[in-house]
Length: 207
Image (cartoon, rainbow, N blue to C red):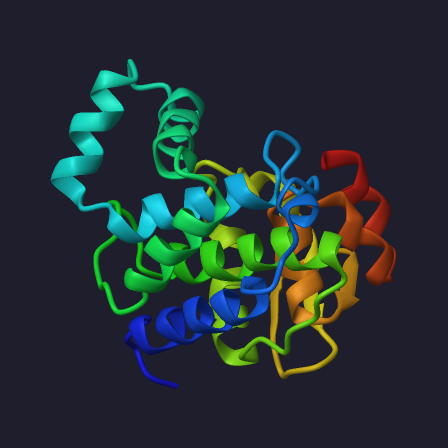
């Protein structure tokens, strides 16, 4: 496992572009797993992240009154204004970029995987994600409350992957595919039905 996130991020961007290249106009407006965004808007959010740098982030965050939801919504509006084809072309052009907002580097692995599923699942598209890197993202979410509240959501539970040698935490067991654990840790309720164990109900109550 390389310590660099970028080969994985680049591969995920390429795969997502390939998956979205043939979408119909109706598919672009499909509701994503993000309650406030459709498929096009989630891609615009990912494009914003790919183009962001720490100085640019702090300037735009300040302009949004240090309100993250307002900041994110504004960036989505900016990056989606030209329509899905323009957003997809810009995301394709951003594939090789190695810039990101400030924060732990494994955050951007989580963003790529979770938002990839936010888009793919409602469209019936499947992907086999790289399990060691998914595990890295779960481990980060289990110890950090930044933005998504993962640490609080999984506190007092053991998360154990059934498709790779990975577990984190202590307490009642929650087990299932690594990507489903990652989605559940990020608050995506739809993934809970793919998990089992005595800790699932506690996780459901916190989602």
